[in-house]
Image (cartoon, rainbow, N blue to C red; front, side, top):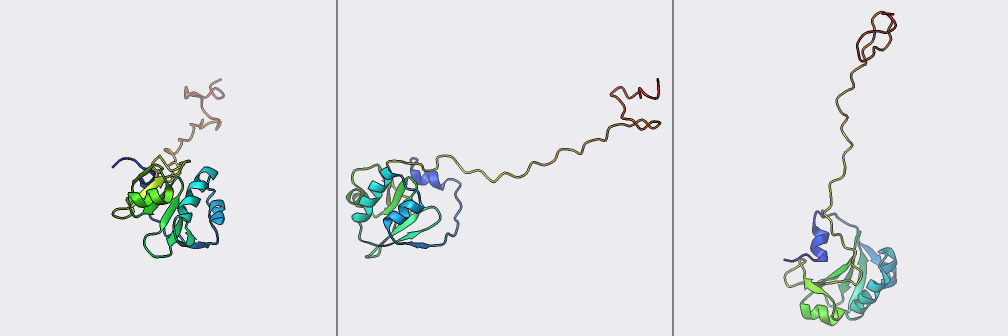
Length: 159
């Protein structure tokens, strides 16, 4: 399967339980998820062509639940998934870049005009650097208790 915004987003992603938050309007969703204007036009067209029951926000995306049941459309940063077929994607989104989705068997997704989807793998959180071997105490003259130079001969006592 070729690289899609969805597969790039899934690389290294962990399933996190996200609390569902009802959204009153599509404009509220756009504001909450900082959706670029170019993407708003496409998403608005998709929602208008879908008999939407409600909008529900999650941590990284929002869902457009269908009134008649069936899979919700998931609007992510850079793409939308949950179309029942390629024809469904074309009917709701128009002639945009589309691809088979991994969300469910037969599902399709579309790429938004401004695609900021993750393209790099996530890395594990950085751990604090381990301290190196403990520093050796500097050698000290046993007579005058001054720090010895690198020669190991005390300049104070031998003078």
